[in-house]
Every structure is written in C-alpha cells, then in structure tokens.
Image 1 (cartoon, rainbow, N blue to C red):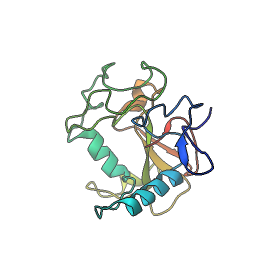
Image 2: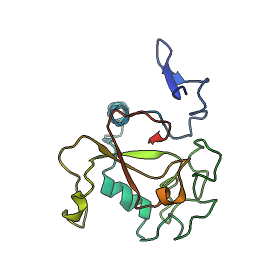
Image 3: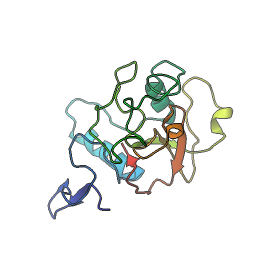
Length: 176
C-alpha cells in the first residue's frame, strides 16, 4: 500500500493512489517516529507563536487519554461502538474528531491510529519509576506507541494499552 504523502519533485503532497490520508483531517500514518519528530521540529521552526512542538511522553499521553479517570476506555469501562474507530469500524483511518471525545474534550485518544510517544520502551521501567509524571528510560532500541488502532481489538484500545516498535518502523496503523 502506498503511503498517504509522497514527494512530487518539489514538495510533499497527498498521494491520491493511497487509501490512507484521503483527507487532511485524518491522522498521519505510515510515518516513523523519526519522521514524526522531524515534523514536530519543522512545525516548531514554522511557528510564529514561540511554542516548541514535540511528541508527548508516554505519561503525558496516558494522562490526556484518561482525562482524570481510571476507566478502561475514554467513555467508560465498556467500549461503545460509537466511541472509537477500531475493529468494528470502517477498516481504515477516519477524520479526526468523528467519534466521541473523552471527558476533557480530546478526540481520538484511542483508536484510529497508534500514536508515537517520545519515550524509549522498557516493559518493567514503570514498576520502579515515580508515580507522578515518570520519565521513560534514557535509552533503548524500541520506542513507546500508545492508543489502539483502526483495525485493533477492543483490548488494544484501552487507555492503558502499551506497544513498542523500532523508531524507523513504517506501518499503516502507526503515526500521530
């Protein structure tokens, strides 16, 4: 499958041959963590507001996804078919904001696309880290990915679900 953007010789543009990225409102997929970081750097350089853009840490991602709760999914302990784009959805990414937001009004915190995080992955790291705003390991070979995916099962779209990939991995379900 073709990635949703391509180089046309002058600029990156939406790829009309791709089944992904058919709208500028869809999540960016088929991008590595390195590519997502490069986009954040580019956005920081383009910004006129003084902000620095970056990927969230794993702890920041989970804090935002949970919206102050301990429930399994953004809207409760049972996954409603209208709550997120996962295995019962259209089997493709959809425009962001199409499904219900969490308690803080954030859309697509689970489902649609898995989100690259800034942290390196270690399955046991958080068992010995501080409970409040823990930072990830200082090094590793794989990085953290959070959120379930558009073709994922319900268990994989829980707010607590964690995954990990090498930072140069390209998949139709990984992005931001």
